[in-house]
Every structure is written in C-alpha cells, then in structure tokens.
Length: 93
Image (tube, rainbow, N blue to C red; front, side, top):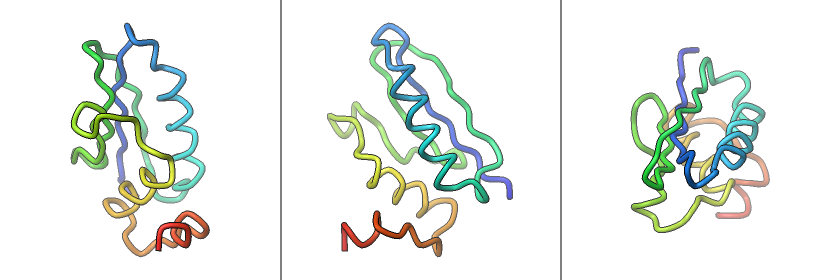
C-alpha cells in the first residue's frame, strides 16, 4: 500500500475544517488503501484533491466543492478501482 492523498485548501477562506472532514471521510473509507494523507495549506481560494499526484478534484475547475460520494468514487478510481463503495456506488448507478 503506497497510495497518497493530498488536500490543498485555502487558509484565508477558512477551509481547514472542510479539508479535515474530507480527510476523515477518505481515511475511514480507504483505511486499507491509503498510506499517507496530507493537508497542505494554501491561499487564493485553492481547494484541490490529489490521489497519487493526479488531480482528482479542483474547486476552481468544478465551480463547487465535491459531494463526498462523488469524491470517494474519483479517489477510488485512482487508488483502488475494484473496491466496492457500497451505498455510495448504488446511489449513482
């Protein structure tokens, strides 16, 4: 297991709690798959999520924050494509 997640968040926008909540959700869902999760403070309205160095979510590109189920699916697709997300998968099929 060597999957790394990075969450970049804007300190001036006060998005630390949102970043920490998302981190907790990902660590709970992917407890066997994630080896490292980093919260990286930034500025300029940044809220990006990377899985193994690949950008899987950008608030600026999407124009919004992710729903947690869609984010889990995007992360899963990068780090554990065969993992069943249970109700999160069934809801979007």
